[in-house]
Length: 300
Image (tube, rainbow, N blue to C red; front, top):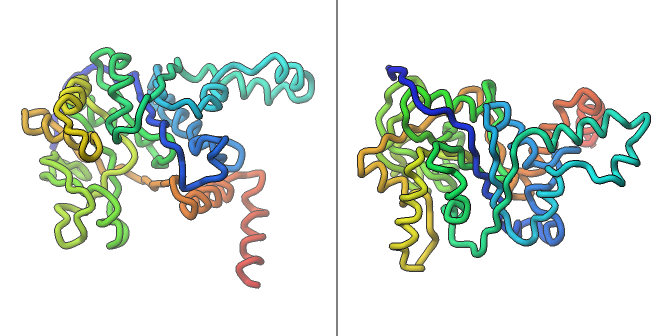
């Protein structure tokens, strides 16, 4: 059983959103993959809403030159849009204003694609030596309680870094994700000794796949910077390198099996379509009609 202690609040998050989304070309030639809609709301907005719900105040989005529409989306409505929505459409305008007011947004440009740790080389100074959430702009976990809230709760109990995880569903998942290694310390929690990337079922150290989100202690940025200095430019600069160095130095890492969680990876076409269908079916305005349509279509 984990003993509860007191640790600093987590109020910052870094969202990595610098990829080009080549698997969705030509759609992503002009639209960032993070802005692909789940019915009528972009993917990245769902992620931001979850972060805010969990208590995050400052959100740093690391993007590239082609992602200006992300900045525009979280900005205040333009004068032209305000004029167009005045009158009966005023509720829509209020919704748009709430998007801009959800958090303090900061945007950083990533200059080159070095690997999944690269965004922290450009945004690390904004973390300001505090614990922070590190996540992606195109995949997420839906859970109750909120997955970020579950991670923050565990961090506040332990003071350690936290990896969000989901149980492996099918054997092929062992070849798709990093599988965490460690010892069970509580229900659904492992104290990590490392992570094995795509080990296959035979060599997997556990049945927990690391997906989507991380909560890092304030020291993590310095470890990434050190890893970058030692990087030989062969292969990518990965967060796993810095993480393992921290574990070896005595820092605590925990793998959290997110309770009541469903992982959505919208980074490929089929999973994106599945996500859209799932979200549409849950809506009060179109869910029932969509279900009827799908039943008729599948019966043909």
